[in-house]
Image 1 (cartoon, rainbow, N blue to C red):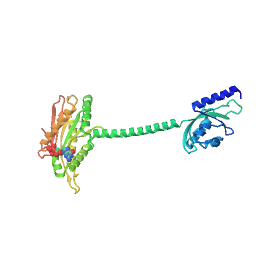
Image 2 (cartoon, helix red, strand yellow):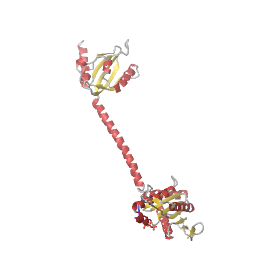
Image 3 (cartoon, rainbow, N blue to C red):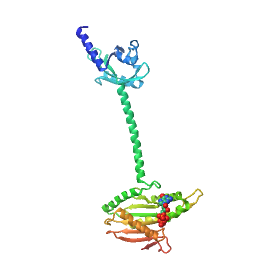
Image 4 (cartoon, protein in one colour):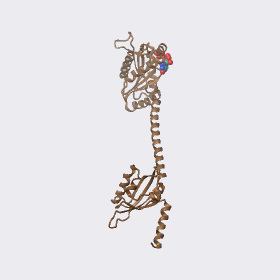
Length: 354
Ligand SMILES: Nc1nc2c(ncn2[C@@H]2O[C@H](COP(=O)(O)OP(=O)(O)OP(=O)(O)O)[C@@H](O)[C@H]2O)c(=O)[nH]1
């Protein structure tokens, strides 16, 4: 070999060494390694004598999960599909550990009489990079899982914040938010909006007679009766306070609201709520105040609740188990007052006009 050729060889070796690259050359026809990647084998813990020289033997060192990928990369390049042969794979060290390497090579004899015979390339260690990638993938996975958990917690918190914990109905805050929106819709679309305030009669006596837990059961039973009246996606049913509930009925006039209230009053009166292990049950009644607003009523949701509340007290004043309705007409004046009570004094259909 001439001086210049020697110098070129030394230059190449210098570049490879500085870049941490290990040169190899395979004869794909004979399946022989014609230039061994000695540095890689040393890194794997093999002595010079232990370096295998058959391509198939080298394949024996590849991780089973990577081998097909590597063979495919070689085949794609030999077939001219890819401009270079590139692959990342794990090799088994003499001690049995898997170490990540990468190959970068090219067929160097495409213009020769036997093209596709000589594959020349370099191998370099990418173990640290792969480990960092694995760590990042693990961290990403953990972050994804934590994110999912946070979203679930968030949904649960939103539910807790929006609903009453005893009955599962909307709580007062949710009611005031949604109710205000319904008021705006009434003004915009000229549909009546009715509201029922439902209060359990003489509830203190239930607590006193059966205890607080039994009282809770009664509250839940009345809550269910209210919820059963709900038109899904239209009405709002909320627990307003201790034994007080509010039902918002959009697009419902006073007469229809009164009918709903009256049915509910009957439903509750028919309830028999188990209150102890001995099989005792309690029955309760409710008084209901109804208020209705129309476009131009000039009142907000809070005022509508106040009017229904006042109607409720009128119903309580009659001796309870009664419905009282205040229909708020244009201009804000309560125009229709109707009382329904199960009194024997009431007329045939139980309606008394105040
Ligand atoms: N068990 C139970 N009791 C409650 C709860 N919230 C409020 N109460 C009780 O409900 C009772 C309400 O009593 P009052 O406001 O005097 O009314 P009432 O006895 O229903 O009488 P009227 O409304 O006048 O018919 C009180 O004794 C409260 O302690 C609750 O979540 N669970």
